[in-house]
Amino acid sequence: MGSIGSYIFRTTIGAFLVVLVSLTAVIWVTQALRDIDLMTSQGQTVLVFIGITGLIIPLLVMVIAPLALVVAISHVLNKLSTDSEIIVMNAAGMAPWRLFRPYLAVAAAVSLLVGAISIYFAPEGLRQLRRWLTEVRTDLVTNIVQPGRFVSIERGLTFHIRARQPNGQLLDVMLDDQRNDKERITLLAEHGQIQKNQQGSFLVLENGTMQLQKSGQRDPEIVTFGANQFDLSQFAVGPQTISYSVRERYLWELLWPNKDDPLYQAQPGQFRAELHDRILAPLYPFAFAVIAYVFLGAPRTTRQSRGWSLLGAIGGVALLRLVGFTCTVFGVQFPAILSLEYVAVIATVAVGYTAIARGVIIEPPIFLIDLANTIVERFTRRAVAT
Image (tube, rainbow, N blue to C red; front, side, top):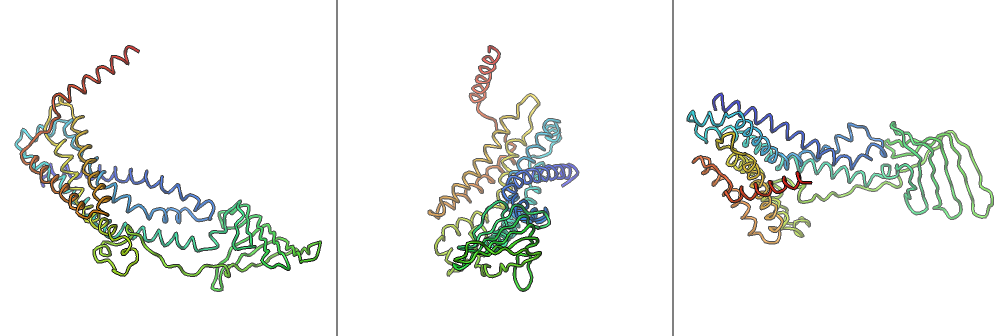
């Protein structure tokens, strides 16, 4: 690769990692804030919160990585052009293909990353998240610990707490049991604690009173207790069968689906569209790298604006990805459309490679530049006039 190639490779990889980590962190935070009640209302630690919400990070990386690659390549090419390094290398006789090889190596690394995530890590993360959500929905203890709410565990049995401390202690607990028509039991306690062991789940109440109102009696019987125990295991839900969605299937499950799978029988088109989208995912980094270099890699003087080239690169990437999304959506009902996605990616790489090898400089039409300059001048005059 040479010293120049190594320098470009290191710079591009560094920019790619910075952009990838930054974008992933921002999007992850916006997604994680939706589950902030995992800590506030369910008493989980920060590590548990990060671990659970972090299960979507592989999926985010798979989507963001090709776009981060485009940003990194555009940044490095713009830096080389601003410092006139591209012009110097071109004047020294360096072929455009030789300058493109470091970016191709970076694209290969990103492709391997995206491929590994799409094959295993993204569906595995989504599966882990699905298993946790299923466990939460079937865990009575988690569902009843909702501070400030009156939760009906079953008909005639109501549970309420005022707050829950970070250590799991419940404050101002009320348990009202009206399941027996002959008597009504109301438990009030200052503190409570949910304990799980081999015998089941138990609600241990401390410093409270038990009010027993029997049928036919006007006044209730009140008993003060230091500690009382209520069995929650009788309300536990049995094991649940988890059905994974199409996006939560591994690549080999999409290639060789179980013919008896009810989901596959109901949505065979979804399996087919998801399979082709997974196969094409590692190819997009190469296509995006070619698009970025075709528009931004040609030598230009400092007087030539690179704004149009940057817009062209962004437009080319957006158009190619839009074609992919469209083919995936419509390919569910019309399988033949899925082939257009392959055609678009392969044609982009082939045309781009030809343009790079021949050193073609892509410039917008003169009339388009004149039109844009005229519009800018008019807006400038109006702004000055006002």
